[in-house]
Image 1 (cartoon, helix red, strand yellow):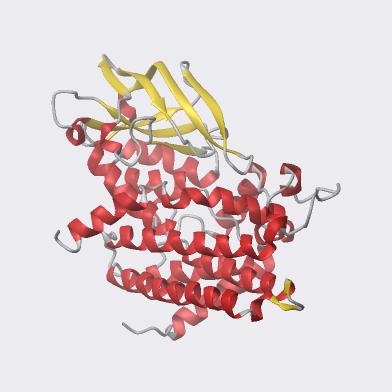
Image 2: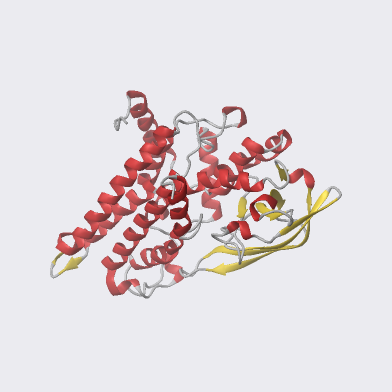
Length: 398
């Protein structure tokens, strides 16, 4: 594998940098780099800028409004956008349900939903996990019973990220109880404004309203909202998860966070010298940096393997495990760098315009909140324990 960019790829990187220099709003970049709260309006404003550039749906076919970047171009965009402080795109529409609709959906579904994802008219969330079906997703119990031209949906989803903003949800539902679990699941597209849907907030460790419970009580969903074939949803779900898990590795985000950590450690003192010069602390940073370099090379190897348009396989599980461990390790070192100041913080300190008194240190609130929030990284998208089982079975043949 050639680790060097071609002349065309270097020219593309220059184009990306020029675009970000000109178009990335300074206030949004400041929030991202400072780990502050981003509003729904911030995300929508940046999505509009990307759509005007034609760079929002980077892996969609051109016929549906995509740009069809190569895997290397996507990698360059990820690296540069994280370095500049670009908000991470909300993935549920453009990166998750859209590929499923493009691959398995009807022509009517493609014509209806894909333009609305591009325009921002639809904000999607994901209805996979349930109280008794998280990592063991095939155990889900939300039922969809066919009744004429509709399905009647009853059940509950949980950990629904940003569901409070969403007007659409893609759900895995059980349509057949007479077969083994994986064979009785279907993939439904559901309007969140349908009567019978209730969204309740779950407040996370960092005090944020990021996730939700979603309840379905006799919710009527048109049959035409079924993606693909009934009882074949497990196939579509696995296809979607390969995209999700590769993205969860967060290589670009880890590089940006590592740079921030080094800057933080250079400003913190221990025994009168920068913490970055402390042998024990610098050794820990070096280990994370070595792991990140190895993960970067693995990511590039996977990129090279799908250069011809394939879909990442079990390697995405391997990358998800290591990538999330690295991000958590960087969060832990940042927390250690600010020491006892990491403990107390006000939720209001997470707002960019906060003008009150800080309880301890201006670095503390965003880094503490990020440390708490990112404990989830090794759990969602399929827990790391489950990913290790996939790797052992699909790659090692155990």
